[in-house]
Image (cartoon, rainbow, N blue to C red; front, side):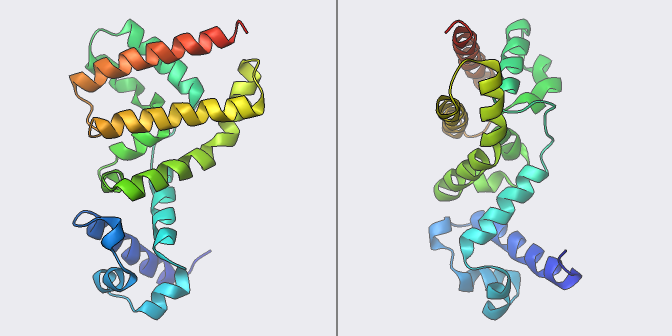
Length: 200
């Protein structure tokens, strides 16, 4: 367990990274500029991190941990949300079910961490971290519910999470009527595909 001083230092560094990302692209952030923003020395920084991506890793984990988790996650929650969307008539009807959204969308909804998804490098880095953290549970669920191999399940999960990520990035991570209508079509399409897998 980290001591209080370490927690204070790491919090300062992570908050500084979020602040810098709100002003400039990750590729232009340096350890020196991050240390200046955080008010820590380079030696202190390197006591806790090997580089800037370590800070992004911690921010990604913080964002995931701060996100309300669905009772079921990944592909299973997509199937449930598709069913809810099919029965709803307007976006507001879905508000109680937003925890069924893919984890990348739920993380991006958090105002504190939204800036992470506005940077091209950081957003792609984080989505791959989410994929790695969530893949085992999703592969297990897919193999249990459909007659597919682990490799097929892995690629199906990658397709689902990257597809959701790219569509939401293209739409600016906004949840307006346009987003709702697009999601309804996409989720209905995906649900049909998952149902078809049961017939293989």
